[in-house]
Length: 486
Image 1: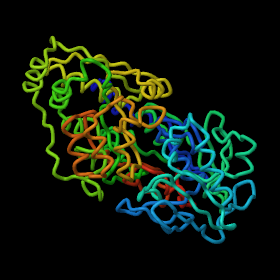
Image 2: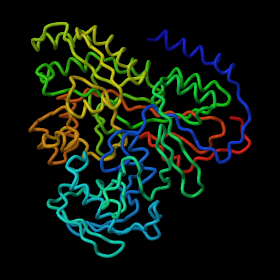
Image 3: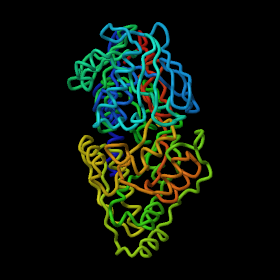
Image 4: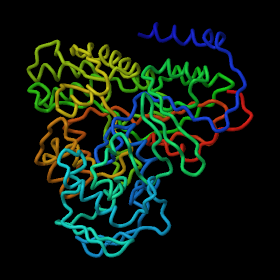
C-alpha cells in the first residue's frame, strides 16, 4: 500500500511534463471542484451525507445558523420564546426569492416543516415530532407550538426552506432542487453544476474517488479546487508546486469507529475497551491525516460549549487489549469485519488499523464497498464495525440522536442500536458533562480524531479557505482571477 502510493507521488512530475500548462482565458468559466464523493440527495428533508449537506447549504437558506461558538443565531429569521412551548419566528425583510421567482413567505416555512412531519422515511422527521402546530401570523411571521418544553428548539430549525407550491406538487427536490440560496441548480448529469445568482459564476462538482487522481486533475488544470479526503503526502507535495495554493486549518468534524451493539461479542464492555486500546490513533493521524488533525474523545470538541476537556484518552496498549479480550472469554484471534468505502484514503486507514489490531489479538477483515452500498448498510445496521465522520455538528442534541434508546433508525441515527437507561436519563437532564463521560466509558463508538481541513487550488482561484466543519461556503464568494495561467 505505502510503496504503491509513493510511486504515484513520484510519477506526478512526469505527468506534468507531458501535459504542460498553457495560458487560457478563465473569465466566466466554471470553477471545477473535484470531490471524493458526489452528493446523494439534494432534498434537505432527506439528505444526511456530507456532500449533500454541503451543497444544500449553497442552494437553500435556513431559519437558523450558528456562530463560532456553536450558539444559534438568526439565519433568514429572528425569533423569541413566547413561553416554554411557543416560539415566534419573524422572517427578515427583502429575502432573496426562490430560484423559480416565487417570494419566500411564512407559508413556505410552515409547508416545509409540516411536510417533514408527514415523511416517516425522512431521517430528520423524528426531530420535529414535538411540533404540535404551526400557526401563520402574517406574511413574515409564524409560531411553532410544541407538545413539550424544548429550550433548544430554535437550534433545530436548520432545514433548507422549500417553496410551498412545489411541495404540494411533490416536486423532485432530490434531483432538481429549488431554494433561495446564493446558488441555483443548473444541471446534474454525470456531474452536478450550480450557478451563482448574482454573477452567473458556475461551479461544477466532479466526483473523483481516488485522491491521487484528484491531485493529478488539479495539476493538469482539469480541476480548479480540491478539499478534504487527501493524505498528508499529497498535501505536502502540492505545497511545493508554484501554481498550486494550499490552505489548512484545525477541524471539528469527528471521525469514529461505529459498533453494532446487537452483536454478542461487541455487546461485551471489555471487548469494546480492548478495541479502544488496540488502536494507535496518533500513528494513524501521522500516517493518514492532514495537518491540524487532533485526537478526539467526544463528538463535540472541548472548545464547544457542551465540550468535555476532562475525558481521559485511550492510549495504544495492545497487551492490555489482549488481556481484556481474554478476561471477556473471547477466543483469540478475535475475528471482526470492518466496513468502509472504496475511497483510497479510507482503505489505507483500514489497512493500518488492521495491522495495529493484529498485535492485540484481533483479526480485522476489511470490506470496502462503493459509497452508496456502504452507507446503506450502515443505516440498516448491517455491520460489526464501520468508520465514518460526523460533519457540521453544532448542537449537543447529537448525543440523543446517536445514542438515545428511542433514536434507533428510522427515528434517528442510533445505527449501532445502543441502549443504556442510565445514559437516557442523563440525556433527559441535558447534563452534557455526565453524558460525554458515560459515553466515553461505555464506548458505543471508538473515538478517533477531529479531522484537520485542507484545500488546494490553482493560482487563479481567489478567496477560498477551508472551514473547521468542512463546509464549502466560500464558494459563495470565490473568484477566478483574470489574466492568470491555468
